Length: 301
Image 1 (cartoon, rainbow, N blue to C red):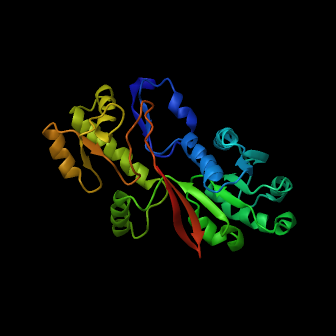
Image 2: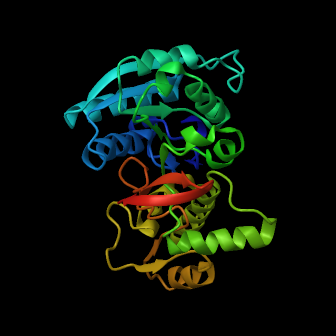
Image 3: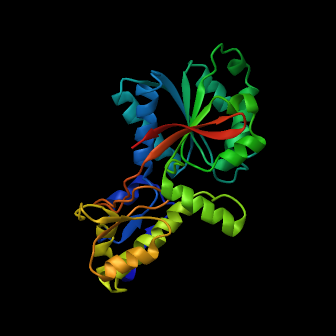
């Protein structure tokens, strides 16, 4: 890493980040796609009891990695990936792209669910093209779409086909049953007049994790800060008896650290607890859209 600069990402979810030879300088507060992908596959097999699935994916680094992760995990749970289809992402207007041929290829093999590894921009158009498919209309029981993590709600409720949207489930690492998120959301709305945007809570946690590590180390040197990031977040090697602090408790945390009392910071994105790779321990929620509104249906610790 050039000049030994510590970096903390709030949104880089690629699995490769966990295995870099980075001298412990690359960290993140969002979960790895490897973790969310495995949870998607496990939930599909064990909770939904689905055995036949297809995959629609962005043909880019994100999509290809997620495709492999989900395929391996789903097959290990005795599921079968009956078909996969990728769409280009370069030099393409994804909100206008014709997804019908790809969707028809997937539907021909009778999947019970389609893992849909996409970003927000293309989400609405995909639901429209799926509804327009004659093969889809011939299904007595329509296959679910299982969306990877992302900020889909506004796009789906604005531009999505309502009938297809009702079949969608998705995964997210932010959960409304986290008290720290509830406080953060209220503070955010009071400040800006709208609800937190995607990854805003992970950004908040990146800033506070570093701030507490600086306070703990009493240093602004990278070599000192990186040694304290795990200890202030309840991560690998941290004191299990540390005092928990959360949102709106900076003054308390600062006072404790000044008195050399260990803290365990949990934020609006959930339990952080950085591991040996600089990845957070993440909780997930499975969500749906019910009557046009976001609804959380299951939690994964």
